[in-house]
Amino acid sequence: MSIISFSENSEGYLIPLEDQKALCSFENPIEEAEKWVAQQNVTISNEIVLLGLGAGFHLKALKEAHPYLKIHVIEVRDQLLPIYKKQIQSQVENYSCFQSLDALLASDAFENIIMKSLPVYFMRSSWGAQEDLFYSLWKNLTGRSVYAIAKQFANLGVEIDEGTLSSLQQTEKPLSIKEATDIIVNSDSQVAKENRGYFETLRELLK
Image 1 (cartoon, rainbow, N blue to C red):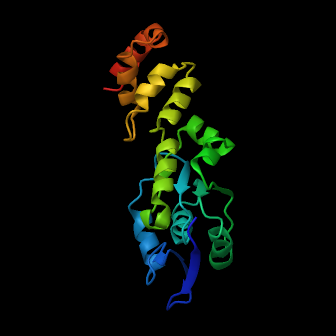
Image 2 (image 1 turned 60 degrees about the vertical axis):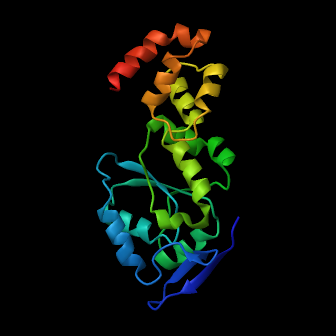
């Protein structure tokens, strides 16, 4: 994991830096956060996931603009939360820190987010030097990874056989449910054949 350091800006705020790169605007973190919040459509749910705490100004702005929201914050660097609590003077009610994808997948938080299909939001600058890890977390939390898609089908009572999973794993891009369904419908495996009618109906509904 990269080294986190902090530098004070002209307004007296401590700005976190990872590998010397700021996790938010160094000069105007509050203005940046408010602009980010204004661009987000959070009307689709009263419970969301914020992927990346960063400096936390965007979380503060989000809470102030939408006080009714239940926000689950997921971070990968445990050095950031103490500074957020001290500087922003606000608690984070639903906070989890996972330093690997495996840790996320084994967590109750992941099960809850996938089960509820919670929308995931992020401010890209807060990811810093951890973009690859955050991107992997995002794919799984939004149901676009092979593992997450298998989870969603399992929640519907439909298991995906190992052969079809292997076919799904051949793509690196984030998968939609429709793309995964297309692969399963075209699979020659016995389990896929037994459930083909279900998946063909699902595919039609997703057109």
